[in-house]
Length: 113
Length: 117
Image (cartoon, rainbow over all chains, first blue to last red; front, side, top):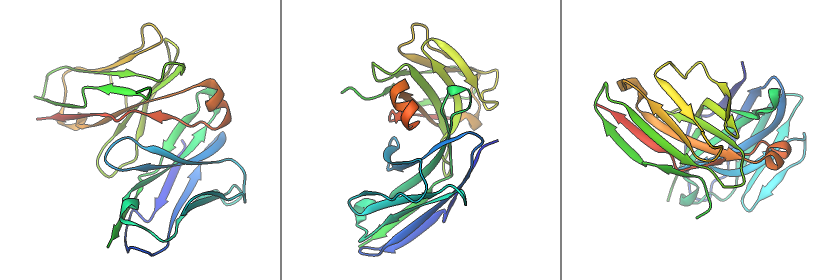
């Protein structure tokens, strides 16, 4: 059974701080690892990672994958209150062609002014 | 709006009643997924359709749950004889073979929140 573990589960920081969110995974037929941001509604896509060591960046957010050690990190620099959300990591299993996502419990980030 | 649409957005029901949720995926997406999310948890996979065929069901999907996608477009998720433990957000997501083949990325709807009293 596929498994994704995120840490920490909860984090409170001040505006301007840099945070690192962790995700470890065990996925039988690993295809990719996805990061989503969830505020009050649906998860919205942030990054897709398939190759080790290649950093993906989008503004103040960046992410990298280590397929040897089976983990990924999501970095947010110069945090803002609008970054407050639950960050979900999901491993994509491509067995049987269904591309099933297994999600972690998420990291709840709270950014205080 | 061409995103994934779900309704109703909120449903409050009494224990023992039946409820039905509807999902309209992005029109060119042939894959449709249902997930359930409870407080403090990530979304948990329930079931998956490719076109009208239901190809996979999680063991979380008890006999009281049934999902259909009769014409390969919209889908419904019915819960019979609801229990308090069914209270959750039910998320629908869709993808296309091109995207799924490349990344596995799913596009999520805003969810249907169920409260069973």
